[in-house]
Image 1 (cartoon, rainbow over the protein chains, first blue to last red):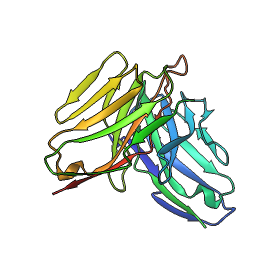
Image 2: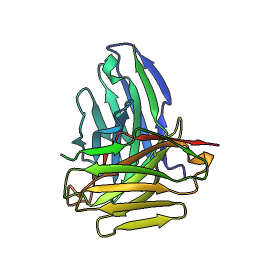
Image 3: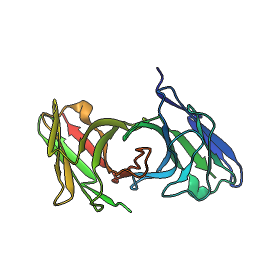
Length: 110
Length: 116
């Protein structure tokens, strides 16, 4: 039981490049979430998915898109990366109100 | 929307002493208050949570108290140990849909350092 896994762990992009962050969970949770963590700002919700086939915007969705591929997988895509998207990205999955986090992806946009 | 404030931003305590971290929230509909611990290079890990129908909850050296009237809740760590050094986040949420899904709003974190 791996819990929540994320790939890659580290990534450096140039401004304007695109990439997809992958997340998978093996806990059979309905809900999945994407957060970004910036110094002094805690964790901010980007997008979430209450169930397979549904996605909704969170607090800071601009510049991102998501796909809930199936119950296990929830991906986050940056179509045209900007330096303001330099951050640590965490995926989480949840059962009712309890959320479990992955190890994170550290993204740098130059 | 919900706003969660957390204090202090940094806290240093001697090993064996107690540590207290405080959070306030704005949305009176919030009914679930978890605390997460984040070690360096890792994702946040749930350590304790409390719901609005309970005033206090304990788990060994960790306790959380909730005052719904004043809209604040606190994390108490007793007999602190070096492994308690980490960043701690509080959060608050309320149900947002019939699916029972809850969006968490996080505080900005407290960096706790235990001095040996």
